[in-house]
Image (cartoon, rainbow over the protein chains, first blue to last red):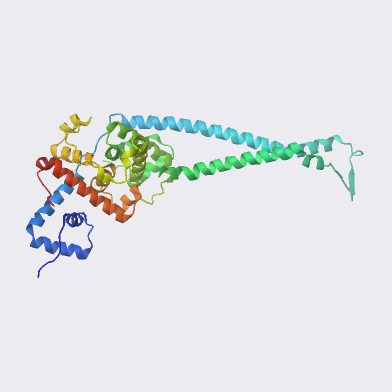
Length: 174
Length: 195
């Protein structure tokens, strides 16, 4: 039976690389048996493939790995130092925020301790007398409100910064 | 003789901060990374820079490697992106849309590595010179497929291209390599693949 398959160098390379589907591979096999000159070309292609696969790797300059490790160590130290700096900022923000939250409570407790039971406005409950300290002044204080707002803005920015660093850094790699 | 420590174990050790594991990974892959970098940037000095940057990126992002692909595929992807970034910064014109515009005959060009080339085996040197004349993309895909034995699927992941695109690129790279061999080294190489 006459094989009407049209052979090209690209098909031959695809055959050698194993890219051809089975049906086409069978056609190439048949063609090669009928055309020894193409069989010789296949041998040349296979030889070229072998040579490409056997090319020696290029070696970097001596001491390359040591230089890489030194660079990594330097970067690691810098990163740790930067991280320590970050921790310090976070702690400061936490302290400021904590002060704003705790101050009214502390002030309230101190005020309660300073007041004699007679002076303190009391609410008569059965067998219990609770000191009542007016909180409105503290809650209405602009100092407290702006302070809290500032603390929340700081924390929000830090949070955003962390997210951006962790989420976007791996993408930047690609 | 003890079996070599697997990549997975070295990665785990490196992630836990063991410097010796990091060092072993660098030594294990330095030639692969350097050779691929050299194929892209065509210059040993730049290839050293790219290779070092690759390893630093490898350490930085190692925690993100989840074993969804082979470690080498992940590493070569870093090499590819680092080399491309390097080329973009250094010579924007090298990334022209049509790589076919590159001159195929560079017989009169001298390279800084000419003396080193002479020391190599003739046939290897010829192939090296031919590959050096290819564009960075062509040289990269030929190296990845034939020398590093990466599958087309893995090349797609490394170069972030489709399977069809990878196959086409590989086919074109082979054709250009053959053209260069025929035009420049047919007498040296002995085999002429006439079309």
